[in-house]
Length: 305
Length: 305
Image (cartoon, rainbow over all chains, first blue to last red; front, side, top):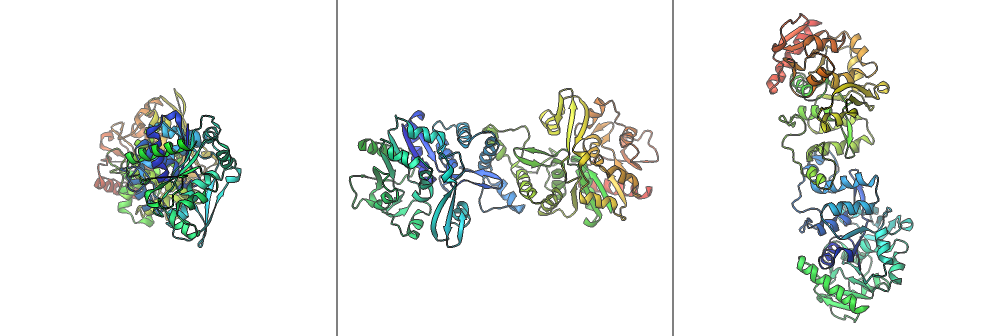
């Protein structure tokens, strides 16, 4: 059994590759929920939705979020009525949030996520990192900002100083994540090429998760989100620079602070690669790349056992 | 100043005719809110929206509710996710309910209605009958049903036995309705051709409204919703039959129980018309009919003063 920790677009791509090569009972994808927020009264779970839409094959591969072929009649109308328009919700995407809100009245986020993913035809387990609310708050030179304020409204322009995960101290791992971590059949823990600070760190901040990963006999392998020191998408490189951190393989290993048994890196970063690194093409242009990188990552993890 | 009481489609048409011939400061349209309900977590105000969309010129004239040229991406997606689909919310219409929900956190339904109507370019005053919740409950041979359950989900098929307006006892007229009723400049009170039992009765059930209308020196004129004993749209004739009531002009006068000074009826019902009735074509096929009927109704009211 494989446990993958994932955040947004890059994480969803590798998770999709893993789902393409593993049967549903052999994969659990635990997803960051610290980006979740309420918008226009809807509970929005951006990372869960990106992973779910990607595995359902309905994601928009161009913009990297939302649903392919989306329409915007609702958003245009709500803007005309003077409503908030800085975070755009497509007509189809909106249905996910409305359904989530209805189901959350009586069910956990884990159960709601499974119901929505199942309705979209996803057969692999997508679980939130926690059913308890955890919220990323970014301290910047423009003050402390809620994550989506920083990420979408301010488009990551303010200087990133630090991040905290409000609620993490009291949060418990979701049942799916806890069960995967405790599963004697666990063969590998894969940290997907998501932003280490924004997407993976919140998962590790939930009490018990980091310790359970450290205690697990399963090898822990991350796929670096950087290629030639740059992020494929998103603000990871900018944030690392503002924090005075490098975007080298060694910096990623240091960022995960003793957690990793191995790191998959791109050929562009191969100079000085150690035996704990596997060098390949990490850019995932499509489903074939996703499958190949997933296969190579699992093979690498297997050799580390 | 003219006060019009209105419900759904027929009421919206005459209200639109009145708005076409009166300046904004000379018309208040008080709208039934007993059909309001929460659906998919949204506060839906069907009659207010029908009147608003009609005055904004964006109503769908074919189906009689919602917005012309509406799209249904949200509804299709929410249905695919297993959500409720019996009450259909179009993508643009949905924006109204989302905006209403946001604004209702800090504002009265009166203020929210004015904001939304204003954003849609409506310059005349559309006011809810009350800012307090009033809910129509229909007793039928299938049990007591919330109004939209009866009206939409069951398509008025159960036998109508009686209706009650839950919350009406404790409701106050909205400030706009109360001010219009007390306005010394009030020249006429028009009961639009809406369903007397479903749409106008709830307005009259709010404590003080009926008495204020009776006490007002302004003539009270209804436009009959029946043509040749049939409703132009909706279940009014079926309900009247199930209650053992006729759909004649005399029955409409009786239904309003002493409130009317005059009744506008269709030529099809002219047999036996009294001097308290004005006979004309009451079918409103378009804007010209709406203006003509509004003009004739106001002229008739003026003659009754």
